[in-house]
Image 1 (cartoon, rainbow, N blue to C red):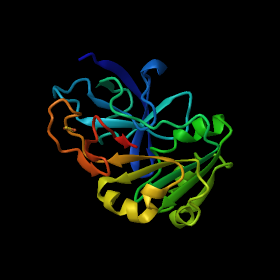
Image 2 (cartoon, protein in one colour; image 1 turned 45 degrees about the horizontal axis):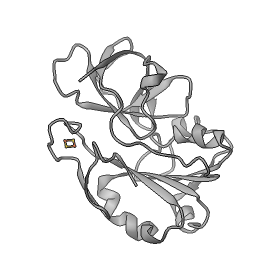
Image 3 (cartoon, rainbow, N blue to C red; image 1 turned 60 degrees about the horizontal axis):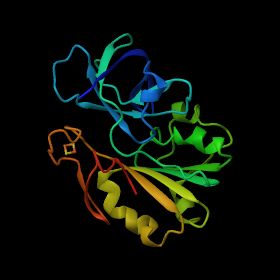
Length: 223
Ligand code: FES
């Protein structure tokens, strides 16, 4: 399988994770929600065990997380091209809800400039509330609200993007009664994806309303 190489040019903290800037050419950037299997170029593993996701709101540089503790600025990485299914923001959506449940919203943040670029109003619903380093990167036109404000206003969004751990999937239906929602919704399921589908390990299998899905190939963004 063809591999990419890139240099880690900067490392910073975001929402409690290590994030970094990679000098990959734009044509090889993952869309929000997709991931890049990666490892240090010097490593000899055959599976590239680290999954890197787009984070933050920068549009001119590629910000990714979460980086292993051993990676340092200047390190060169080996990567595979973007994997899996990412978010598909409908071009017609003018009221966009982003919702992080039980975790920081960093992987939803790349949707913010896309939504604002199509003149959408964006509200970020979070539980827990974002940390100061995340708040610092969110444009002031984006409203930030608690999760309860979304469940009380389900007639507001035209598109909903969720980010949550796989353990929270069973309670999603009771939280949002997804079958009856009057808008498009997609869910980024955070789970381990140790083989990226290469080995068929099944560790990333999640049960959905449409049957069992592999987060590594069918997701990690599920519709
Ligand atoms: S990570 Fe192994 S099948 Fe998905």
